[in-house]
Length: 241
Image (cartoon, rainbow, N blue to C red):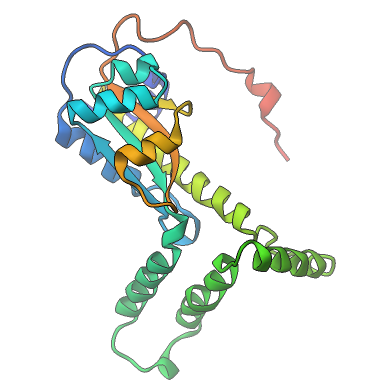
């Protein structure tokens, strides 16, 4: 029986040694489908998930992950990849979806909310994401900083800001995946330490793709959890305003 959300969160630990027991590929795939239901900035879904089950590729990935136990003992690996470079395609997909929801009626018959949604993807998103060698991003940044002197504005408009946005969305999806895995008794370990260039070469990723994290997957060995869980006391991180 699957665990509740709270049970799965409590069960999840970063496991670095896994048993030599196979995982069901379809179950892991289902957890990755849950990952795609995570919230994402502007619904652009600038992510991809590489589910590695091939033994040869797993060995190559272990080397690229600097020989970490979480990769060496993993039965499967998931690489979470950000694709900020796909913003135009994903924007078009959102526009096509909105128009399909609106139905076959002329633009002049669109309601206020429908016009706002389409304008968001047809005008605002291109304004934020379009850049050229960082120059346009810098100009946009200066413009919005000045505008912000007079009213609240969105200030994260540089290319570097949009990279952060893409990585935040990908991390939310990764957490969905790991909690889903915990719910069915499977274990994971997110790894930030890797040779990201080698990972991209192994997966044959394009230049615009970036590695968000590599996640080792398996069933925990009794030696796989390195000690009791430590968290800073809740009262030190919680502020009610």
